[in-house]
Length: 115
Length: 116
Image (cartoon, rainbow over all chains, first blue to last red; front, side, top):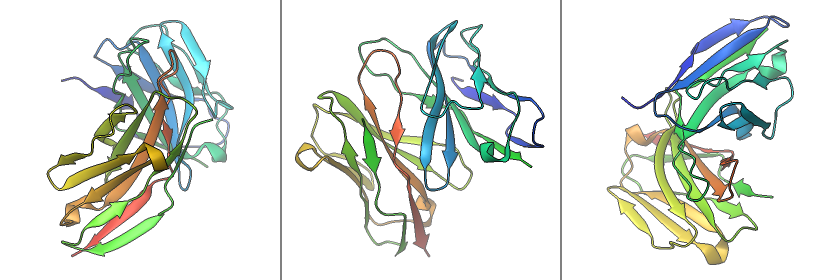
């Protein structure tokens, strides 16, 4: 089954304790992206990747890191989480052709609480 | 810069009533894509529809219909004969068709509650 998976689905942590949220897709997609969803703000892009070893900042990258060492994986790293990073996080992927827009497939979401 | 406005924060209707969710967008591109997503209480994002800027034909899918009007930069979503299962947060989104970042710019969402 074609899908985007995220782990963990739920996480409660404390300020300053490094964490990683994993994202994996099995569709051989080139493009992957992370969003965060906050009440009253909708979803906002954090980082994106056009291919292996190619990543760039989205609209709200502060406090986050990403890596793209393999095509299927795009982990989101919070080196020193703070309470303002409490949010619902979504990973997305698509087959990027560079010419025609392709549908983005979203993961199930990760609900993160930073105390 | 691109922007999506969903002015209706929350809507409540009685079951079987029709309801329209408004979406107004801003973009400087002539080629772009518009989307609607549903987020049920379980939290996942469910893709409903994609429309490109060159296709203004309205679309109907069962009880759902979409009205795309470039003249008013709107892409409204109507649910006919609403059901309790339609209760969810609905997001309108926009993507400019430029090579590279296929970012979706989302509206702030409309929470729809269907009252039995």
